[in-house]
Every structure is written in C-alpha cells, then in structure tokens.
Image 1 (cartoon, rainbow, N blue to C red):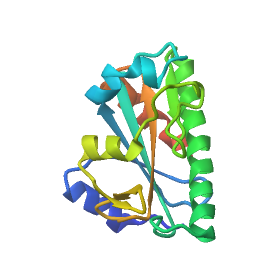
Image 2 (cartoon, rainbow, N blue to C red):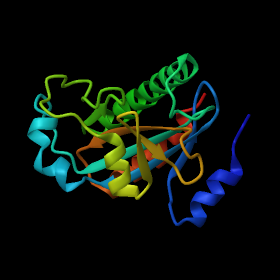
Image 3 (cartoon, rainbow, N blue to C red):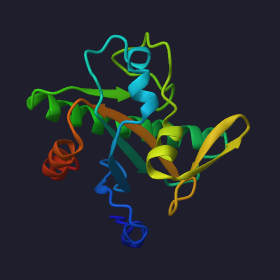
Length: 185
C-alpha cells in the first residue's frame, strides 16, 4: 500500500490541513478541504445550480493523487483522468448518501465539464481549478488553452474535483471526519 507519508506531512508544514483518505482502487492519497463558498458561487448559484434546491454554504475540494502528471494529452493521461473521475464519483456518491442520511443536500460537480451531475441545464460551468486557486491559493498555469493545477507537493499529478454542501463548515468537517474510515474498503 502506497501511503505517501512524506507528502502528507509536507502539507501540514505548509499550514494546509486537509482531511486525508485513500483511493479505493489505487490506495493513493485523497486530500479533502472544507472551505467557505466563493463570492462568485454565492452570487451566481441560480445560474450554476438552477435545478437544485440547494443554497451552498460550503465547498468541499477533493484532490485525488495521480500516478502520472496530467498536463499532457495522450491516451495514458486520458485513461488516468477517467480512472480518477470514476474514483471521485464513487467517493462523492458515498459522501452524498452520508449527508442525505443527515437530512442535507450535496451537489456533485462533474470535473470533466464543470456541471452539477443533477443539474446539467446550468447556464454556467464551475471552473474547479479557479475555485482551488482562490480557496487554497494553489497556483495554476495555462497550457494549450487549458488550466493546469500546480499542487505544492504533487505538481501536476493531481485531479481536482468539487462538491457543494448546504451546511456550514464545522458540520461538514465533522461528518467527513466521522465517515472517512468507511470510504476505503
């Protein structure tokens, strides 16, 4: 099992305190950050989430570690992105069920197109890399017209994704911490 203890320790040195769990299929780390919603999301929630009865209060940023850098476009990178997207959907659906049991809603944002999976008619797409940049201050750069996230430890071997919760940060963190032991296995 590859637990990457040095990388996780280094994040704490940077004063970044994610919730850490591991991918079910690959046992690579997943960093989960619970942050306040950006002003852009607050001001545009009716355009971003038109079919959902959710007023987001909390952004749950999920960063999945990749086996390879994701900045190029080739078959190997596309297969890895698909594996990570599938891993994200598996995890996010489990989180959503956990929150539904508590009587609250979660919007799952598709990392591929930036649209909520339950509200594909949204007029705007989420720019997940911009959200990560704004909330976590991780850098990014443009390559061939696409934004590429530059993680402080993983560089470009990271897959960013996003959930939105309608409960406050403290409750969201508490629920995520309580149920993370059930995510892997």
